[in-house]
Amino acid sequence: QVQLVESGGGLVQAGGSLRLSCAASGRTLSTYAMGWFRQAPGKEREFVAAISRRGGSTYHADSVKGRVTISRDNAKNTVSLQMDSLKPEDTAVYYCAASTYSSGSLYYEWKYTYWGQGTQVTVSS
Image (cartoon, rainbow, N blue to C red; front, top):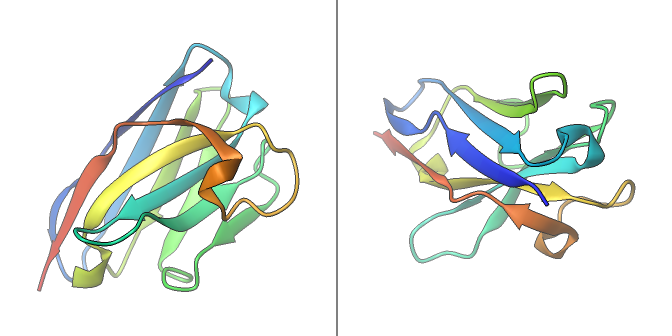
């Protein structure tokens, strides 16, 4: 089992940047593919980005492609989400999640077993 804790959220103006971090404990993070999801008020949770176990493959939602970069440091047991050129529509609670799937699409929530509590990102216009 792995415990995930997100940090780095906050209030930022449109066009600004934030870097979210997800720290894992309990098991080594290299065991899992990792993903970030977000949920805006009144909307369903949606996929943002994912990264394979060793970091060789990354996946990004079309809505954030070119503005968001997912990375991981297995030695530090952390996963990060660098978000640039933020827009008001990026406002949401952001969750990191761990998946035991080693291949195939990581876009789907059901592929993730462990979830963090989330960190709020608010982008003002």
